[in-house]
View 1 (cartoon, rainbow, N blue to C red):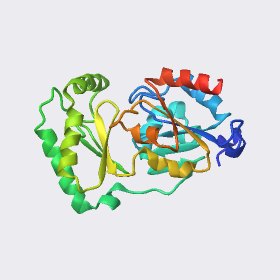
View 2 (view 1 turned 30 degrees about the horizontal axis):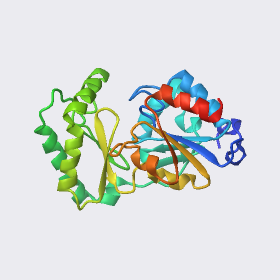
View 3 (view 1 turned 90 degrees about the vertical axis):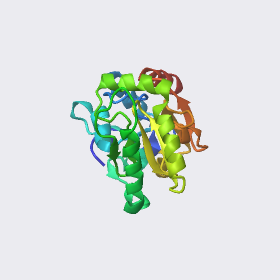
Length: 260
């Protein structure tokens, strides 16, 4: 355990017993793909002295480090539990936990037709803008973006508004479900410009196997509606779900719930 983790009470000695708070990242702890605010970090530090805390996000650890690890801080020291890629990459108080792999589960022979279909579909898609990186291959999933993950912040905002009207991602997901219904995959829309594809059961509930010691698990997320990437863990009977609309809403709920 690092010296930073040792600055906080042991997990079994926090004042609010047997309780952990898990947080989505984009739209919950930070604005989408932006960095965390000093006010949020300060509040999380206060909360950590009362309960165990962790984040669970679909992105890889590098992106979560960029968003949460400001001023050179190491993100795995800032939380008791770090769950990148829905928990396929996991840390408990700085120590790595067992991992898993999307490609090992699906197999190369099945992955190639899926990737080819996605790229052909996007090539034929008539949307206002296209940039680059339409499929991002991660350890536990692939992330698919019709506009491309290289889009700027302004372009992301514009696509999000366009997608709300024209349902580009929702329509694409339905096509993939029909075409690859025998693959046993889950499609989860999250963030502004993309959706995740992963084996069934590898949604954010995957991380709950690592927090079984806690009787109470609070989860805070913004995409808690059906089809959103927070839906499964929000609805899971093992969690107490809290829907938030933005980081400021998260902070307001934490202050009320935990007297911060």
